[in-house]
Image (cartoon, rainbow, N blue to C red; front, side, top):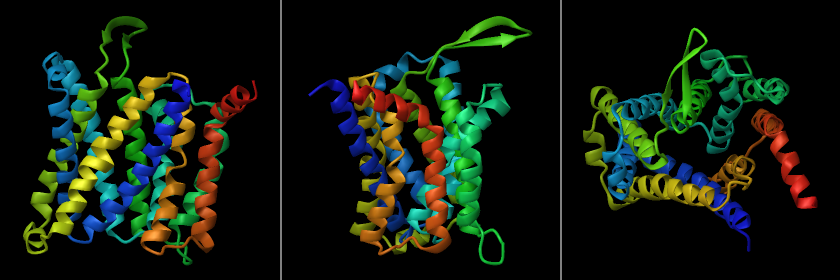
Length: 311
């Protein structure tokens, strides 16, 4: 079995873990304040990664720390919107498809903030994405539902996180008045992820301390609650990251981006099994349209995969 095939198999497992982590999160927020859950989940995962790669942290420069904290701060906003959307009672199937639209928003945000070129596939995907989000977020009275709006806001900030995370993880030139005035050194993957996760934990924890009552979590404390939090932190976050990094290290030619788009499908299947959720009516139409938009924006990658399989 080639390394590329092994990488693809690992990434399929990563998408399943990502879907399972939606179940963990949903179960946890039924028992404790949502922002406190996010804080504990990301702090624990970040501290685990810190322990694993502690030596790499000692070699970071202040600029690398600054980039990582900025990435984590944007991710924290996205995750706060995400968990409040989940707490509002939106079905996991709908929520996962809305969140997947972040991949469509990313090129647009990169253009707005950094002047990057928008691929033509993005323009083809946008009408499907907007129509799908409309079906998912509008009620029969053409009013935006609060839970779905929270997930749309989350997808926008997660898209910005994708852009900033990619820029932090790669060398890039700093330009002023058409002259290169410096080079921003990339941040190694492990410390970048660990710092970003811990930043999410600290910021969401601070917000939780201000607006939530922690006594509710103390009153409802149980082995089940502890299990959901630990599973979310170590399986749904830290282990998922480790497996994804391992897969990417096996082959630079794996079809990771294509494979990762099946996450909302796994989530919908697991939600149907675990919570008895069903996609019907506008929700089903909206999810299909969003999924088509994601496929369109990744169509070039699909074509490359098919070509390689046929040769």
